[in-house]
Image (cartoon, rainbow, N blue to C red):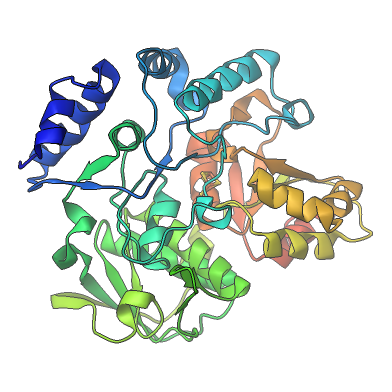
Length: 416
Ligand code: F3S
C-alpha cells in the first residue's frame, strides 16, 4: 500500500503511540482488503458505545487509548448507548450499569468525540455532502449515508472507525471505489409500496436475499432526492423516514451498505447503477415478510418507536396518536437528544409523557440491558427492532405500522 511520507511517519510513531496504533489498524485493514492507499475522511461515526456490549475489556481499551493521547482529527459522533443519560432511572436500569455507561462515554469524549449517542448523526449536524469519504460504523447510518446522501463509507467496525477518526484516514477499498458501487441485484417491485411500514418490510425481504450485495430497486414511486445548497441530500420527511427504515432493514436482515432506487437516489437519477449481469429479483408481495416479523403474542408490554432513532416528524406522529389517551403498555420513543429537545419545544414530549410514555434520548433497546427489566414482549414499526428484539433483548415482537403500535400501547394488546 502506498503511504505518503507523512503517513509513513505517523505509522512509525512520529506523533506518538496513540496515532501509531490508529495507523496500524487502518493500514492492516487496507492490506487485508488490497487497498492501494489511504484517503482522508470528512467525518466518523463510532459504534460500540453500550457498556452491555463493550464490557470492562472494551472500556479499558478505550480508556487506555485516551490516556495515550488519542484525539480525533475530524468531526466524530457517537452511536447510541445503553440508556438515556438523564432518564435511566425512569427506564429502570441499575446504578451499576449507569456508572459504567457514563465511564464509557467519558472515555470517548476524552478523545474529542461528540457524545451525540444517536444512530441518526445525519439529522443533528453530521450530514455529509454527496461524494465525501467517511468512516462510519453504524450499519443503518452507513446505508443511509451511502444511499440517500451519496457519500462513501464502508461498514466499519467500532475500533476501525475510531482508528480512522484518530488518524483522519481510512483505506481506499470497498465502497470507496466506484466499481463497487454498482448494483449486483436488480429488484423489480410489483406490489404497492407506499407507507414507511411497507418500505421497511421491503427492505427486510430484500436484505435477506442479497446479503452483502448492492440492490437497485426499480418501480418504487418516490420523488427524486435533490441536492440542497450545502451539497447534501434534501427530501421530504415522510420519504426520508421511509428510506431510513428501509435501509436499516436491508442492513439487518442482510449486510447491505448501499442501495439504489432508480430515478430517485442521487447516484441513480441520471445513469444506470446496475452492474454487469445482475441477479434479478421480483417482489410481488410483502405479506409473508410481515408475517415472519410477527411472533404469535397478544399482550404487549413495551412499544418501541425509533429504530433507527426517531425523526422530529415521527415523534410528532406519536404525540398525535397518543394525544389525550392513557397507555397500558410502556412506550419508548428513542431518538437523539437534540431531536428530543426540538420535540419538547413543540410540546410533543409532554404529550407523550402525559399518556404514560417516555421519549428516550441517547439509548437503544437493542444494546440496553433489557434483561434487567420485566418486559417480555414488544411492538415496533421497525423490522430491525422486531428481528433483534428476541436475540438481543429477550423480547418477543410484533411488527406493524405506527398506528397499530400506538393502538397496542393504549390497549396493551396487539390487534390481529
Ligand atoms: Fe439505532 Fe439501535 Fe436501531 S442503534 S438502528 S435504534 S438497533
